[in-house]
Image (tube, rainbow, N blue to C red; front, side, top):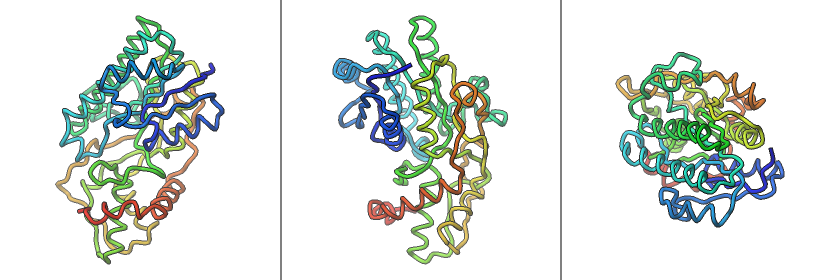
Length: 321
């Protein structure tokens, strides 16, 4: 399957930059890299109608999302469920009415899985329980959109792919402590502790939760493969198949940044979902995808990029708790 014009929502974001770079490298004819809400408010149906009329896409890769860490999810449940649902529903319904779309690629979230999903997470388990409470609104919004695509494929023949990536990290990640995920948050805290000669850092949660981490360029490769490969609308996990305790991750980052102090966790803190690790066999079978970047190399690239761009994050360092 070949796409002449690909619109990438959230194209200037963390994942969007990597996807657009990869799509252009793969010599797709035209890649339209949508900027954020200040240019295209996808929660506004009129903006979405105009998007299709203006760009006449052959493929939509939907990456735009209202996202954040545990704290942001806990403080903004209404905002997170509304904006994520509204963006996806507008784009999918307009694709149906537009009638010329070759492919709709939906990128969901591992937060959609039930809180106590058996390890490794299999795609068929996604509706077998309620998500972890702090990020349930976000997760439910995303898997509702996944189900919407399945329904639209059945009723209207809309060609689509549903991808479920795990926690991503890498260069260009979001280091704003109000919305950042675990790896950039830890890097910021350790760097501040080094600058201030602090003998310990205190991190969110107990450290006992586990996560699987996917390098952003690997995720971009999987998404780009899905553009050109015919799939069913049913979800496909995108990950590495390996999990790490947050305590071990923090120690690893501290060692790589040459921090000599102690890493302390809050035994009464919120961990979010207890464990996350995906069964990635469907991704290999359907997309021929297998992650290529190990955690050590990925962290090295992320930390190096952070130091090269540290001046952009000075305000964050001053305000971080």
